[in-house]
Length: 433
Image: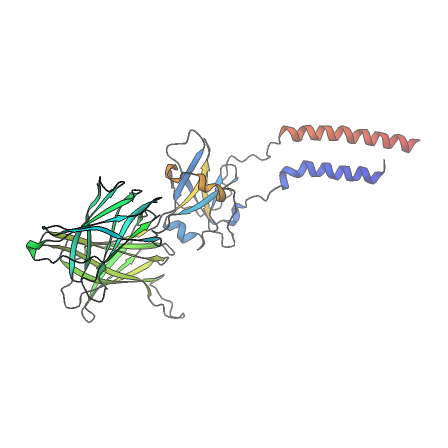
């Protein structure tokens, strides 16, 4: 056998012995500046998926796109993870439905039926049309399968319209998700209060609508308020405590009733301005109307304003009073769509969340394609410990100095050694001859 053949065989053998070392790039902890312990309570007795709620410290320390989030176990191994974001409610899929069986009762009740047809899918919102203005009416929603037997889905819905320019209008009523074919809508007019029946000219139903997302309340570090007599506005400034923290809604807390106010929301990433840089301005975030009415037995309210998600730390809320007195505001709550990191934990495992590496790119795991088969509602929430920014050399305490090699590799090495010895022996005999 030629010497070069033996050389090639020896190189192949060396490749086998090193395959367990160079097969995949190791996770370099020193590139990540921050980490936090993932706390799972109680300790899992079997393998399963868990979710970590991302908070202000994570948003402030991680990259804007969260591409640097990594879950690492006690051996230093990278654990596949996936960011789960609950989407905003989607009402884009709307079905126009003919109004049938219209009736007006002597007591002012106006009822009609909507037939969604065969093969009906999930629905949970009805949108009414009317040209009436300056009204507020209670609405009841009933569902049924045969247009004979009805079950009340919601009895305390309200529709209203206060101005002819349609800037203050609410004609939609939500109800629990249903798959029933028929809807019966009842609008309550009160002749005793000299209310004329309003004319409902059309109806639409939101089908396949997503359920309303469960928003997470954000902690507010500070809240200040001042009255601007010149613009007749109340200005409330909120500090969410961390930069780049997402928010998507505010809720005004007040005990005052019988008011209707317009609100404008602005945002800013920082208040302290560097005189050497260009002056930072407040950016428009959203707007809407808040109201709380209790007159002649009618009660309706809306104290929440939704807006497109923003990642600004400071929010400024302007409440426009015009010629009315300023309303008392007890508190302003801020909400966000929950962002959670999903990963699989093993019994006895110790896990940490690493972040703070600007050059990191989004990891790609099989979990991304398998997440559709995971019941997220059954994945428990895990907590996060205090943020650590020290050297990470001591973090992995139980990592072995040399990883154990599998049995098949040991057998392969023994067999390869025997073959190599035999080849060298034959080569030596030929050389002597």
